[in-house]
Image (cartoon, rainbow, N blue to C red; front, side, top):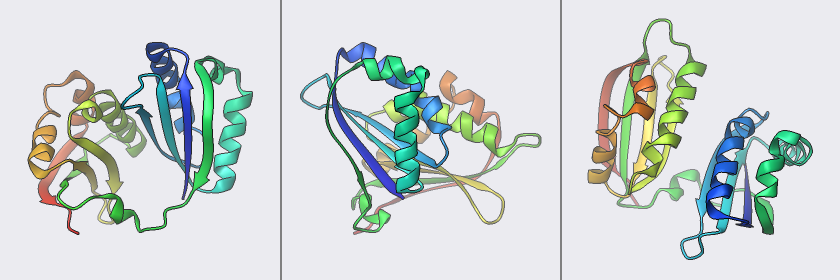
Length: 196
């Protein structure tokens, strides 16, 4: 996989965030897309860094061409004051090293209810994570996984195990999460700590 990292300065903090969020669904539909992590500066409110994950370097370059050419992306591009850097990278360590020792892990295994297809469930999971779960203190990363036995898993990484449990308890009763919760039957949930 290729990690595309773009560091830039936004024209205006609120406008930039709204513009970026508006193009997220379009970016996710570009062939070769694997994931997206938007970040903002810890010291300067208008500083931004976006990490997009692609199947290959060719897919990443094709995506950049699509974003630059399609009119739908113009408001987002117009919200950027200046690009500091843009590059494509591959991990030098196994992905597991991205999880630091002591971080909390949750693995929630579930089945899709009858009549629910995977694409619909993934879209609802993405909305729940992007719309609510990822905004909670201590949240680090989250993925929906398909397992070999036909079940699925919600894989969450948080700052510690206690925080992982607290975040998982927030799925119920939240409007942003209710659609996904209604689509699944939980098989089991386990929690643990990342090891060195």
